[in-house]
Length: 502
Ligand code: BES
Ligand code: MN
Ligand code: ZN
Image 1: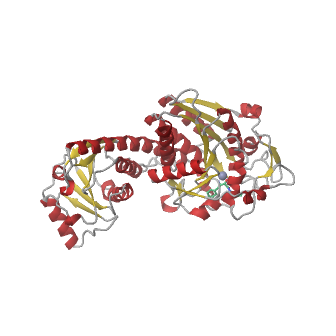
Image 2: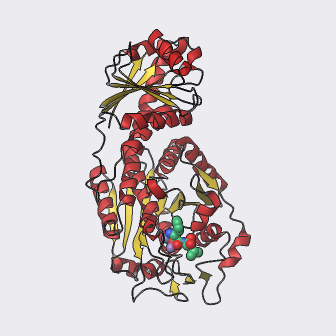
Image 3: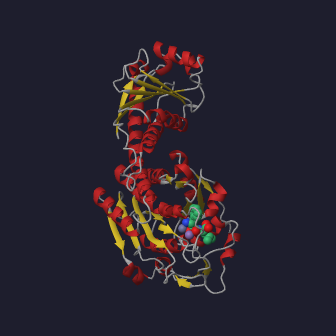
């Protein structure tokens, strides 16, 4: 998507050269000093009950009098926040998507200038709405013809007096926001595409080839460890999961170097189960297809590297992706088996469906060798997290308050939020085993917390946080598909860490 930015007054917009003008207005728009054709149009639409000035409402007009663009979409935003702007842009895209629009001018008819966050959200919302999954569905409607978006930074809108200097600053901020939005959108798009591909297409081998392609295209370092290397290392927990499947496991190591050689890196670890049947503790058939999304954590790591490679922050970043299938063939691990992890701890496998923590614990032990500043793992780890938080917030678990706060803040800034969950020591006892150092499951209740407590036992060497994205990585039902979350949260977190270090 080609995105331009331009300074424009509200009068300029009426003569915009795009074929479509999307105007986001505040709920009190009719009380504003607006150019005549616009004010008249809004007032009449309200009187005729074609437009309600309530958040999320839109009005589509074809060839409105006094406007050069042949399409006009008015969308109402609750307030001047980036969140409200994003919601209004998303609402406006309904009519735009179904039209022949090729070029859109997007503007805000409010008093305050658009900021970087507004621009970022608008670009991301546009890109998100225009994504079409086609890889195994060639009959899907072709991607939108929309080729150019101009974000108009309105100077002196609504009668407010702004100087040339403040207008210039607004333009600079919007350009920065567009750059961030485009990088994040590309990362989200990559994560969605990987996660949407079915398990027979998106295999561990496919994820490894995607990582290699990403590295080649963006100057990253990549290494893929094969089964023999994993055996030599002693990744007994990861390999125990992988051995129930005919697909070879891969351990992907991505590296981005944006800071000094000696600067401790941030490490992202993504769960890459390309299909989770549950193994011998097999899952019920209903909705089992959705377990192709069980590599959403891995996809978010790839997506974040895509965004970071484009934005070039001054930070060192390592991505670790253990990826395999969880299947029940004749060689599969069995309930009761005791396996030895890379950290040396033995694990009693009480349920083969609690496989995510088994592949992650070896990746978390592997992370130690990078002497990380912090480690964040991202995993579609527990159904219990979906019960606890639903689909709005990702679950955040950490024993490090500063790290947790940093991730929560990044989620807020990115509008890709997380909610902190407890990790009191009392939860730990549930993982005691009579036959090994630790059991891989605890009781049913509080299942997302015991899963986090399991991981915690492998993270004593560094600052660590865990994001359970089981409820946020994909949607079910008619809108079934990957969301690309939490690429935006992670990218904002990486940028904030880089800014704090500078
Ligand atoms: N990948 C699943 C978690 C999951 C399930 C995410 C449903 C989203 C929807 C994970 O590997 C799993 O199976 N977890 C078990 C853990 C249990 C056996 C302790 C679960 O949540 O049921
Ligand atoms: Mn499972
Ligand atoms: Zn799983």
